Length: 78
Image 1 (cartoon, rainbow, N blue to C red):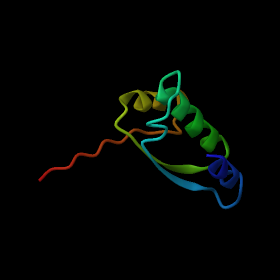
Image 2 (tube, one colour):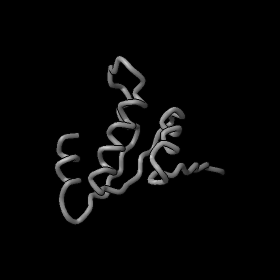
Image 3 (cartoon, rainbow, N blue to C red):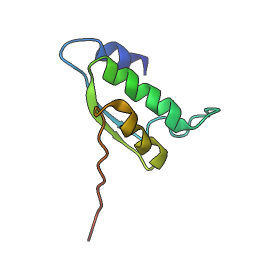
């Protein structure tokens, strides 16, 4: 994470792709709260990117980021 934050402060803006952010960590609170902090910190540094997750609680943070985060749902059909 530290390396991501350092890169996000540079030019050009960091493009990040994060999958299941903070899943498997032993956070005392919901992993979604920690993930929200990470996403906020990256956005505040000018980074742009994608976060994939199965955690619907993480999807709830979109409304709290003033339009800087948008939820998209993909489904796979055969």
